[in-house]
Length: 351
Image (cartoon, rainbow, N blue to C red; front, side, top):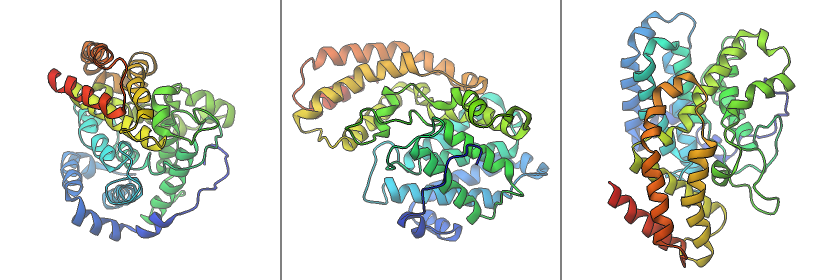
């Protein structure tokens, strides 16, 4: 570990349910074969880098780590389990690993990063949200969900044959990338359950942009370690991939906002059919999106800006228009579902 916090997030039943790559590969083949198709396509696209590789992990081991993480999130918070999170589920892995990573490759070129770097970005897509239910504890600004996800990712890597001695860059890279995805290490209010969906629009933004200062404080001398310096560069790119929903086609951006809104209500123990959800959902889909899109979100890396900045800019006016129209359509909603119906109608009109 770069940050010297205690390891204290042990394996759970989901980890034991998917203990190895063979189990994961069989599950994906049966339940989500499109992931195998995506990995095969990406392997073909990276063929030249794979042939020329020298110090990179074997492709099969790299893919196995992604498959294990995918299955665990699908069981823990996705469509395969009983604790469904509308945003933080295996679909979020697909959107980063698939179209967002593809846009980055197209924008900066395959040769802009090493094969190991591309693998780390894929591993980040699969692992950064593995844990969503950890009690709030924070160290060096890193949230407990992220710390637990780092520890579980290390166990996945070990299960796939990676070792700290032979693959130090992989462990250093993924630790910083997941740590940088922290939006805030504190709960929004002491009296409320820790709600990672809440933090996306009510925090100070992703930690990635402050990781250098955190490293200065907690890992002095890190600038003399080329592995950590490079890992920080990757962490900034990873943060941009994670938040690149701002650069999706506008309808997709708003669908992601709805998913996050519904997860927030679930985590806050509010039913969209009840009156208690009316104002929170309206606020989230108007003021919350406004605050995140215009005030909080910043691209962290030059690679992210190259790939996504122009598309975000194209969403500025549609975002302003939908927020204005939603406020006008439901100034005093009675339920969250009323807000959601108006939101969906406006979005359909904007298509």
